[in-house]
Image 1 (cartoon, rainbow, N blue to C red):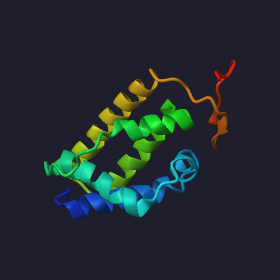
Image 2: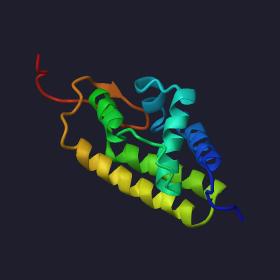
Image 3: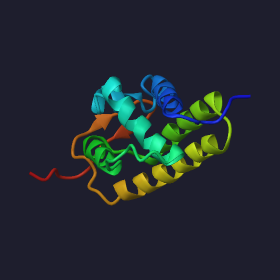
Image 4: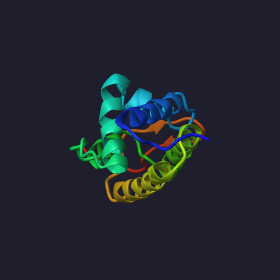
Length: 147
């Protein structure tokens, strides 16, 4: 049986394994690769700090997690299906690597964050550009474009 999340190294391992799945995912991979143009070596330490703070109380994360997602949403509408897929990949990665109280917290906190972010993003304007995503997630805004 896998052990629980116990260290920053565990948080980094989890985050790297998750992005290993997410970047190539047919539903959400394009968001990380084509829209965010994610630099994994720059991003992993930041997200590992987020999870280290949540799971281990390290207080190593000082940024606001919502603003980068709002910036992405301004480029391509982040829909409920995107968050559901993110959660499915996150849960599968946690379950594959870890088991225990902190592993469960990683999954439940991700659920809360996804719900909160999706809810907040719905209050923001939709992107004006039309972007087609894979798996039938065509994303567009209908109506006149404000100049």
